[in-house]
Length: 166
Image (cartoon, rainbow, N blue to C red; front, side):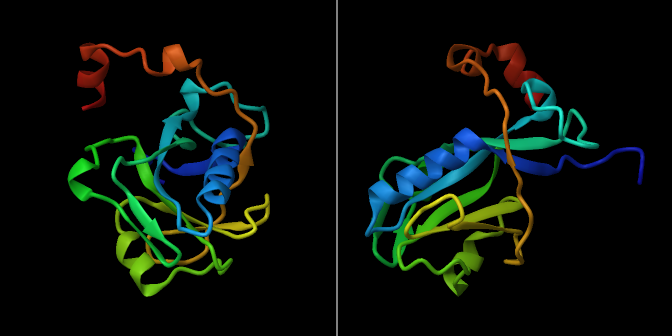
C-alpha cells in the first residue's frame, strides 16, 4: 500500500438505506432515482465493528434527489443541468419496479460517475437491493449502524469549510 490511500466507500448507513427503500416503494410503479452522498468515517459516530476503516473512508449517509427528475415504469431521467458539482457524491441509486437486480445497458452508461451504484427492486424489502461498481460488477456494501450528524450540524458550514473541501 502506498503512502496515500484513496478514500473507499465502506458501507451505507442504515437510515440511508431505509430512505431509499421507502422512496422506491412510494414511487412505484415508476422508477426512483437519486445520487448517493457520503461522509467521512471520522465525521460520524460509527459502531465499533468497522474493522480497519480509516478516518478518510466514506459511508453513504444520504440521497440527493434532483428537482425535475422524471420517471416511468422503465426509466428515470435526471435534468443534468440541475445536478450540483458535489464532491460528496459517490454514485447513484435507482429502482427497478420489475424487481430485476441487474443493471441494464442504459444503467451501465450512467455508472461512470462514482464507485458505488445501487439498484433497488420491488417489493423493496431489506433484501431487495444490490450494490455495483462502476463497471457493473456486484460489490459489497455493508449496512452500518452509524449515528448521522444532527441536521443542523450537517448543513452548518462556512466558507472556510468549503475552501478546505476544495
